[in-house]
Image (tube, rainbow, N blue to C red; front, side, top):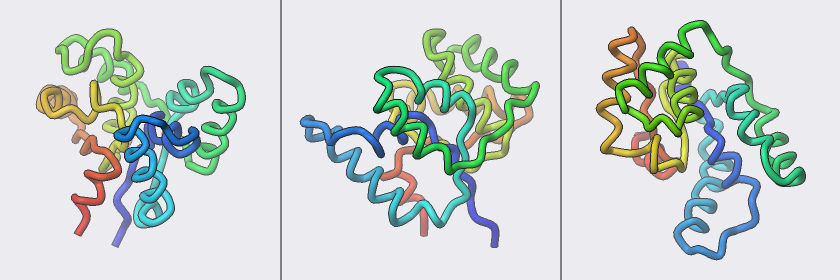
Length: 160
């Protein structure tokens, strides 16, 4: 049986490589991410994209290098001609706010590549129950099945 596919978004790389946060909730997310990466990642075919690498490479040089190093082991999904129109539609329909262009691109890459899941800790725009229906409709109206957008904790709960 083929493994389910997972698009690894930028926040995952950040949680894997950053110093543990002093904020309890964020520290818990970081620990959950690291545990998922060590224990559960092998159950999936994990991918990332040039868009993630571009985001992860921003900021202070050493943390950026750490994020890029962890992502370098993952195969890159191709940015097909269908990505930009889908990202534009996600923004036009307010499935994601205009300021969240990178997030729209992540969803579009994952959807056009047939990913089963998009793994993220971005709960403001991506793993957001109030936006989920609009995101899914835009993807389906463009002819693509949307990925399940979830956190590592949620992905564990979805697995048998």
